Length: 385
Image (cartoon, rainbow, N blue to C red; front, side, top):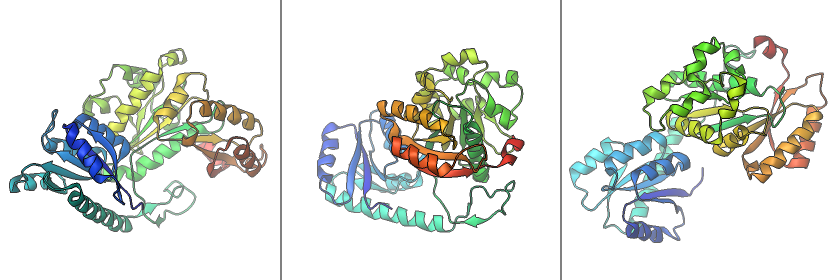
């Protein structure tokens, strides 16, 4: 775990913000990552950046610091939150702590004195996390009740909010949608018992193969929930309205945004709509998996990767895929998105194709694409679908 502490400061007064920024300069551990003047911007920065600690002024222009603290805790649960006050009376401290804040700090304290409190509480929070994690079971991927191996508990893992794009470059037939659907279902099923971790799967393809694999029902029943209809949803719509737009997979609890109703309407899936859907789902889900089309000529693929935290590039061990991925990687380089790409070799051992290691090695040499895993060829997968 990093020893550094990334700090967000929210204060309406620009002079105060600069005072604290200068005050923490040169500190061996604390780095001021974000400076914000209102609560709305602070929530966005906390959601996207997950700082280790936040200093919130009690009196902001758009909301009270007491109102802002719980909202930051919802979008970034592991962030340690402090309230700043000119007069931290006892009832304010009691109220702030009841709302989940670690402490109320007097604004008359120097940055050096505040730094001591930040370090103390962040280190305490990290130790608490270690203790919780050490007592949590994790189920090994691929060893679920429907797998060939027995269900086993292994070491624990932590969960952070993420948007993941799953692509196959510009070529279909790699198993991209099957991987997207399986990954999303597995994550949703493992998290379902907690009631807190929500997993969503967005089908940005021209055809509804996600709905087909999940057996979600007829296209007509899914039509009100499809990708295009999200254009009419307000970004600040409450959770119950968003849930009405999501189709729940009964067996796993996965939340699904179905594909367009018909292929000719795929042109309506613009860059703006893609990014809007992802922004909305970020607010209401822990993990969002986006299955994108096997094409890069339209905005859907690159807009999704741009908005995502990371992307999985599914490749099969076919020499014909080398040229395709080379072209795709070149496009991603021009868009400066290659740092998000992670290769996964699928269908390893399929007798129809060449050696997977040979393909993987040469793709890495040609493009620099790093592979993070291999998935074995298994005829039962297609039979299951």
